[in-house]
Amino acid sequence: MQLLMAIAARFLNRLASVAVWRSLVTEKVRTSQAIDRVILSRLSKKKLLDLLYFQIRNIWRVDGLYFLGIEKVFGTEAASEIDEECWTAMGALEARQLKETVRAKRWSVPNVMKALSLTSWALDQRHKDVKVRKDRACFRVVSCSTQQIRLRKGLEEFPCRPVREAYLKAFAQELNPNIVVTCKVCPPGPHSEGTWCKWEFAMPD
Image 1 (cartoon, rainbow, N blue to C red):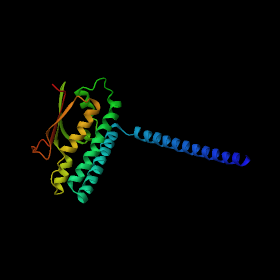
Image 2: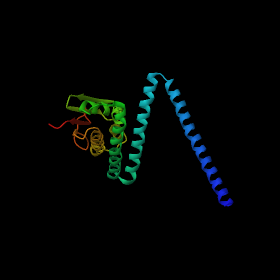
Image 3: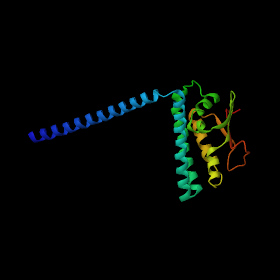
Image 4: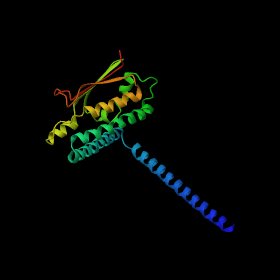
């Protein structure tokens, strides 16, 4: 009996130690995040925005490097399939998170476009044209930096329609399943110099 009590006591002490350790780690993380917030709060608005865009660009640099690496080893088709799967998940994830930011009472086309404008994809499009009406909107990429980089590297245009279409449909579906996303222009289809891709968001007639 005494042996069992001793074992139980040692076990409880160990659990207590683990709990204390976890508490300290959690508190340390919270403290670190608080310090990070203080550092960021001391930046000017311009520097904070510059930092935001810098980090968004880094996300796309990593995405591009991963894609090129997979493409080099397994080919464009395999890389595109993996990319499509990742961005489908990303579309739904970003939409769910942006619900908390936009907080729309009704996810109309204008509100969906407002949320889309805050995504990493939309913010990374430096040259775009967006037109929004009550039940219909159009997002046009005038110049695509990703495709321009590929062309400078001597690579062919990336047939990005399946990837971007899956992303945008997943995004809209998460916010309003009734909104129809239609691809008007996107590689591998033909496009003009001033329109790399064009997407329509509309409520059904």
